[in-house]
Length: 492
Ligand code: NAD
Image 1 (cartoon, rainbow, N blue to C red):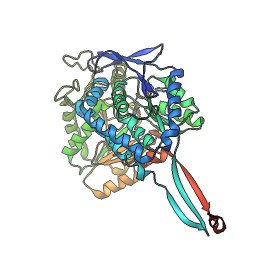
Image 2 (image 1 turned 180 degrees about the vertical axis):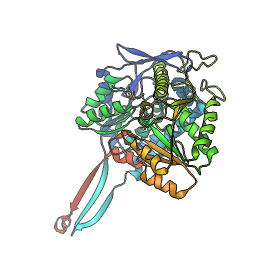
Image 3 (image 1 turned 90 degrees about the vertical axis):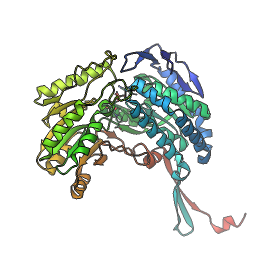
Image 4 (image 1 turned 60 degrees about the vertical axis):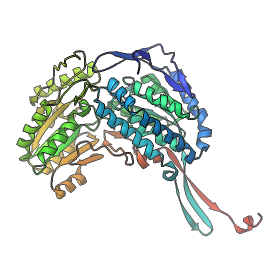
């Protein structure tokens, strides 16, 4: 990927330089190099992209699903061919390690694979003789023009929780990536362009609020998928639904992990460290609070401290680096100030990652893994999504107390438990109020054929991304009751 380039929009089957009055720098968070500039696309241009999706809709909707998925098969092959290049772009603009970026590209491709099952996923159902001589069936039809608004932390995967399903179901699409990380979608749209989708089926609009609000207010857009922070998720959900659209809006998180005394402590610590510090804690499924039960406390605290201090932090493109930077300097400042806040609220800093300096990358936004012990359940540090490599520890005596703490949070994206006891695991699975549950798992990320769930303030809507939920979201059901009296049919 060449450096210092202007990011382009893509609509009507071609690349479109934006006439935006304002461009924003895209900065590599490890090196602080300016990779290029992204247009803050104005409303009239965002609307042009939407209109090209409108024009493409009638023909695409009539294209049989078996033909629509042929384009996705081609896209899957191109994504495989360009796998490494895409992973490198993600690392350069987003900061995660190359292995983490490879994991993201793999998850993206899996969603294309699942959407290729559209011919069977789209099937409806029917009943003969709902009354004498009358049959009834349900068929699925596309919703229309749909759009995704994506966050910075998974620039490739998140739009693909939605896009392949929408397209396979016969809708046309507009993607609005995060303005902080637009290059991954530039790379993916180069592949989309070489697949040769009919013009206007998939479109790309870069930018920020003005482009988003154009999508939310456009009467042509029938459904909006959003992933990002909770305040913005609430805003998008309210505005989209007030305008009569379908909306699925995934928000922030504060994910607890319970460590039960009979857990395999070696495994629990290793996996919890990966959960908390992987992607520098910038995952919506990052474990950010650990609740130890009873005597799990001493063994866990000692081991997790070692795991945090020994993590190798640096530029994700380099070998052996286990954790990259956070996305921006303001993000680093915010995380460091929250660590300080935790201390003033009475938590003990077990491992302090503030003030990190990485040789050769002194201008990078690095925060080393941090652990705060004895976090008070009512403190700000316990309630706020930090979105950085910071793990808070709490200690209780019983499983009931631990589950109560889990359920007292405002978010419900993920909750995990480490134990060797099936009955303890079942009770937790049954009672924990979260949409994604991990048992001896630290990142309970659903595979593409399961819904990417999320409850409470982590999700606004009903149908989630991925799998059958996505098929439901991107189709509307039509129910047909039919009667063919003999005296009519005999005429032919
Ligand atoms: P963000 O909410 O700042 O931005 C997300 C998108 O919304 C971007 O495309 C941005 O341009 C747009 N946006 C931001 N402010 C807006 C406004 N006022 N009006 C209209 N559009 C606006 O989120 P982020 O910082 O990019 O991503 C991190 C957040 O995403 C975290 O809170 C994380 O937990 C969450 N996230 C959640 C999930 C999930 O599955 N629940 C997955 C990934 C990320």
